[in-house]
Image (tube, rainbow, N blue to C red):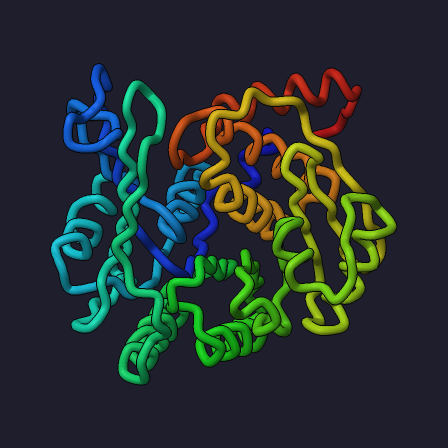
Length: 332
């Protein structure tokens, strides 16, 4: 069995902030007479799944089954996401709950001559109210009771879905059921994820949250990992370091894993890809070095493409073979 086949056919529950990434593309040939700004002649509009929905795309691309659970507004964008964009990407919408008081998050990027000119965000970032929280928890419990969920990914974009009460309840119920939990945090609720299995901040997030300076060195990252473990009691810490690779610590061993050089076009969505592949690799019981290698390769791959895109398994398989040959790694 090839290594990527170990990542297939697992049902993964993804809870977090979903959004639409909208791209308006066109050409620029002149400056507006009304203001010193470029005039973009619109050619195409493309809507992509973003946020936690991009995690679902990555889980699907890796051959497993995403079960996406979130709240969206009862608006045009929410209806579009639930009734067309998800189905167009072969992702179930059964876990999507409507709210009468929230707006669906839409990030509209205007691109002229293949360069981003402007981004317009339409969203509500207030925390879920009591009724919304209860509706979402009821849906999560329903999915856990009726689906063979192997892991839960909590994907936080600070849009108000992952409130402390929800985080605590989901992690507690997952632990009781023996279901792995993986977290991609943001600053607002950084220390709310007590008891999670995998905690995956990036370097900036840990620097913003630790009471000491954190450098991308093994000794400094081990100190940061120990700090997190004392606060969160998490089993594994993964800290992504952009072009420097990643750090991975499972309490028994900790290592820095360098990545390969890339022609970076857009870093958007790389964290979604890393949490997806790392979670599937943990569910499959793969060793730490393999988890780190796959995470580095997959996260780096999506940075070579403009916009938010999921991992491409064919490219990943080829890059894995090249990496194994260059590093003389056998036995996978």
